[in-house]
Length: 92
Length: 250
Picture 1 (cartoon, one colour):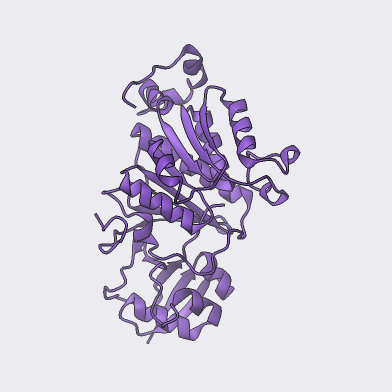
Picture 2: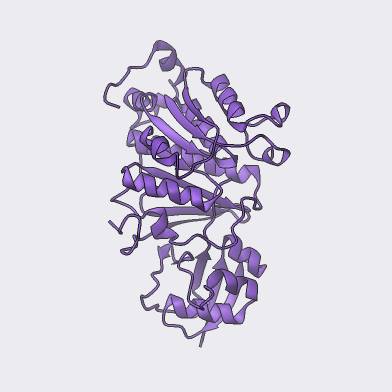
């Protein structure tokens, strides 16, 4: 298990009540990391991250160092890195 | 833009400051004059996009926005005014834009984007600005922009945060590549300040000017995002989705 930082944007931040959180994970892919995050945090956040069947919502945009993270590609996680997660937002 | 109408002397006088911008010039100004921009809706974001583009000398706008002005519009919808409360939003939009630029031609649509009107609205336009609050409207504009091969400037906001990208069908990811599903529980009303929509609206207007006049580097395959709470910014390289049902990842 390593410690990484997660930065939440938009509704995800509102659901968690904080923009920056720490996560212990041994996930190999973005799917793994998001499932770990969903289990360790509150239900409102999990509802935004996961579909009813427990699969990840692919409308969550994830990036690290300004590069989009693809869902299936293996991550090379290192202690202290930050993964940012964005939910869809709109105009108004 | 087959028959370019040259600038009048009044227009040359009006736009002389921006025509000295390197890479823009009188040619760029003529392109704006002969262009049509569709904006939906003209709320917090769309109001500012429309106002900046009217100021910049866009020749024609197709503007879609339904409903009447409410108190809750007035913290951010800068083309609406207190004395026009209860009257159609689109009338206030037209009045305010014409006060600034009486040369501007406006196609006024007193309804929001729907399956029934989206094809016609996009067909009339050279470029589309999506500033609508509901994903159904946003996905309709995306689908139609891709189908008609028209550029689409996508702008969105939440609280003190904003996102902006410019979609070129066949070249960049489309909205459905970035966000393939309609988010559950999204509501038309969400927390935001007018200064957030205003800042983003200005940047979206600049994207329109850049795309039309081939100025600078628009946000192609890049999502610009910022958080005014801590003034952090990111410009993220975004990817096409090979399985996208709208653009096919092409």
